[in-house]
Length: 463
Image 1 (tube, helix red, strand yellow):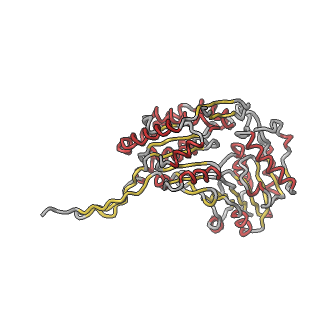
Image 2 (cartoon, one colour):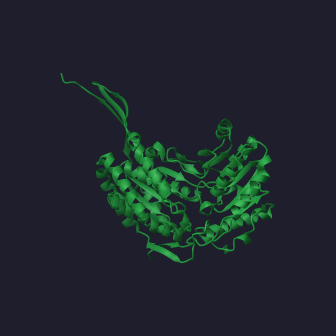
Image 3 (cartoon, helix red, strand yellow):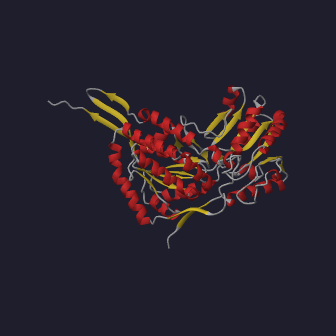
């Protein structure tokens, strides 16, 4: 029996798209085509590969209206936000601009006696397993450097955003990337794991849950395949006494609620210096009450449905447990009549919370945030580090020296000061603890999809 991979739209609960899962033999044949075509792609001049990838991004931009509509149907993001093109274009430009230097040889000696150098060689076929929450942004983080560095790419996209992989393939092929070099495959979990276990790829990049990352590691065990894993997050914000409160509220609450809270680096818990706590909470509640929950195709909607009723149930459960344990919910759900008990979920702010509650320790991935007062930096650091995850942390102060002192104590991949929920392509996107391992973007993003190859040539003169 053929397995069907389906996207159930959170907008109205219907099957929006479905594709048959590729059988293992067909998937193996697709990977074989990629491997056979990759050397010729790698042999092209770097400038040619860059030009074709950039032309692919331009072709994707030309699909903007279709892409934005499809994203709303697939995962619920309001159309007013216009898709993910700002970030896609920023990352594309930056990674193209640094490619020459990032992939340049490291020359130890070039003399009449010796040539000694290290070059960056493509790993062959890169497998990208992309998530639904930022389906274009997360995918291009690895696709762009992988193609530019001379690799072939096989993409498996999440079932919730089934059409995204097709659009990326369509765009890259239109830009001049050969069909064998960029392939989008509809795969089920069993076939995915079988390919990895068979050492089909030179590098595997996965963005998703901790359980998913563990499954990838198990499949890759003993193959020595390189892995990049960006998994869960419970990212904190810390608002110090001297913070610009209006700015902090605006950015942190946007970081907590944008995309219905379904952001890898979204803000899920906030710690506020006790003297500023009441003022911060009051303004945060007013900010959230200004949101409008509704159909993502309505221009007035600022908060769409979560991608699935299942995800919304997780968030509702965390909120209910916290309230039963003594937390106070400050936002009246009645202000959000579109909350239907399914995928449409009213946003929430919780106070009187502590780390005995799941909402402060386990990933929520929804429009809820807990806020706690803290006495000093030491308490804030202790609470920020009291988490199995480590992706980003956001510090709010007008004192950079104090921020540096705090930042270097926080167990996380990226620390922001007076900013949150942003991915800077110039610095490595990475995490620690259960958030995973490896790094994307920046020069290190090129290192992830290449391997060092050393040359030591002794020049012997004839007698």
